[in-house]
Length: 384
View 1 (tube, rainbow, N blue to C red):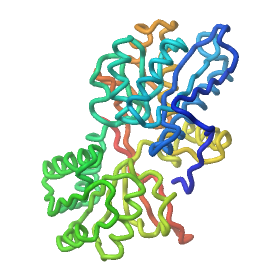
View 2: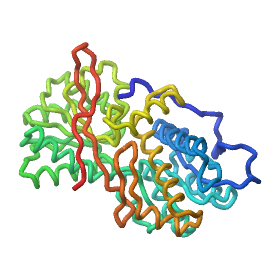
View 3: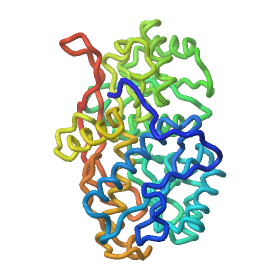
View 4: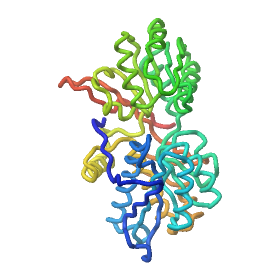
């Protein structure tokens, strides 16, 4: 688990900022690919990591000779985690920079905004980390490297019931956020379908910092597990209050937990918790080990899931271009639809919606023999 997040490549940014990996090469033969990510704003932690992963992938590809014998020239634009800016970024990449495909946008709102435009322009697009169900609904030119929210809710319910032996569960969720509410609804549906009982489902509004009233209600139920589907800054606050009030339920979370060690004062308050993730730095694979080493050397910080998904998204697109043997958009899409990709987030193929068929990691937070609270790969759910 990361202990810090360092933002790299950040400049004084205005509405749109473009980074090119080969400045001044506009007149040379090259493969032009766009990257859209939030480098500033509230989602910059995700966008910087994801775009760094994609940049590393293209840099390594160029070191190996490029694609189809040509160098890759990437154009990275900051969409500020704003759909309108993301659309403007897309238009610039297509009409000014003449890219043949796009990695991004990173987050679901901008990805949904750009998806329709990508299909209208018949431009291949792969979103690294946009987990909302609608992202791939616009047409056969839209793919994603990450699993969906419903998939992780299903697997966390399955893990709670079958691996932890939980028969009762409580949920505490943000009723004003689609991510949190969607995970809560699906966790409840799947846990009950397995035979479990939801003994409390408590809501709060976005921006809340005091959860003691809801947690007091939950404590009275003595639930086996407590599902907390939110992002890491909220989880840090919530976990402290869970311990303060003496709630004994095993804490469960989703991929939004990644980064919690960066903001929590005392990591031991998370001891015994589990959360779903796209990637684990200790995954026993030569591909993962090589990626962790190269990413850490390049950016001076270990990769997280967002970096890994950015790396895989770029790698999927690159492999599709090679297998297509062409920069023709229709040929690239056909290659992506039929791809078998061995990524740092596991083996990946796609269903007919452009959603990946891939593994999900369960990360355990625990105190080791050196009295350090660490995160480690605990379990893998492999798709049937």
